[in-house]
Image 1: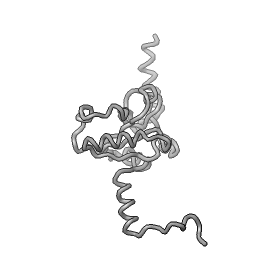
Image 2: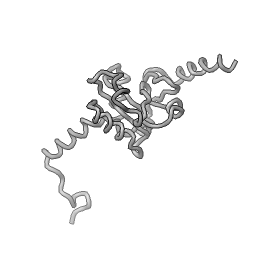
Image 3: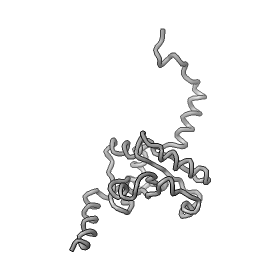
Image 4: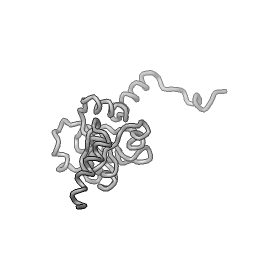
Length: 158
C-alpha cells in the first residue's frame, strides 16, 4: 500500500520536461529577478500590477513601474518596444493580479512572465524595497532613498 504521493503515478520524463519547460517560459522567481538587477543584467521591465499609488509609494520592488493590471492597454504598452519582456508581480501567492496582468499582456501580443511569490516572496527572501513615487534602484539602499525622500519633503514643510 503506497502513500497519497504515489497513489497517482508520476509523469513520464517527456511529460515532465514539457510541463516544467512551459512553466519556466511563463514564470520567474524573486531570486532570479534580484540577481539580474543586482548584477546590472536587467533585460526586462518589472511591473508592480496591483494596489493604489499610496501603497506603491510605501513599498515596491526596486525598479518596478506601477501599472495596475486594470490600466494595461495597447495604448499604454506602446510606451515600450514590441520586443520588451515584462515581468509582472503582485502581492503574493494569495493574489492573482500578476496572472491578470500577464493574460492582458499576452492578449496584446507582449512577452510576459510572472514573478512567483510577489511582494511576499520578495520579503521572505530579504531583498530590499524601494519607497516613493519613483521606481528606485536595487543597488540604492533604503537609507539613501529615505534620506532623498526626506530632503524632498522638508522644503514643503518649511
